[in-house]
Image (cartoon, rainbow, N blue to C red):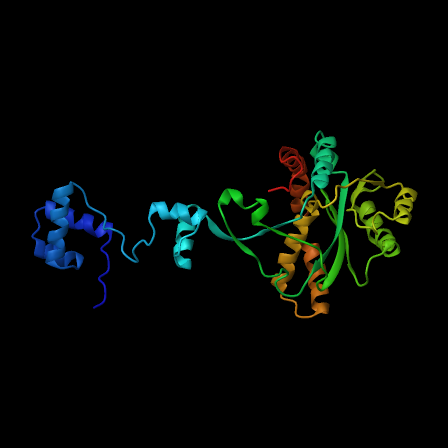
Length: 320
């Protein structure tokens, strides 16, 4: 025999209301679509408790006591996977994909903290003078490997044990691009590995025109990360020759670079276009890059004072 469906609280309240209005139980049962005996039971419980009683929870009976729930966390109890999942949910845990954040050593954290303190007085106008740059890889398809799921509370999603550490590795196409509070600069697909000379060629062909387009003759500060090709003596000499001031940058700090947010948006836009070949991917990247509006870039630059405050508050740890 199939189990009967539990009557809703609204239906029970309607039954009580109809009975209080003097309607016979047979008419009430017909009105709500249940048996007379069900109407009688609801009315009896209502008179006993003075309120409409919500039915007890149906379904599989609880397999552990509160005492055993505590033991689950300490010594373990022989129960099935479903019971463990149910108890974790009751304790506020959720099954989440581990957040991807760079691994930071104590030295990294000290450097990040010092870097942020040196610039904590900068205003949005100061950050508007900075041209941020970076390389990124975009692949055909999802653009991300399968996620790692972890059990954690909402307040613990950035705890060390709940993170998935990330490392850079090649995918399909590498691109270089730059941006500022005025919008996106030039972007190019890089078809070879990047050494110092290749990087200089990129800066000469794409950074310089970007600066001229966005800032004219005004002075700017150029940001790039600490990749070995970026810090080569020949690159430093090139920037000095062009009178471009270079910003120091703390290692392992993509979370401080607003262009990382721009990459995220760009990849979403590219993947929506559904490229199926490298040629299609290159076209989709270029089209999407030009569709990123200046207001979005400005919003990222406006976030810089907040990012620095967050780093200082976290004593150099990754931003949440």
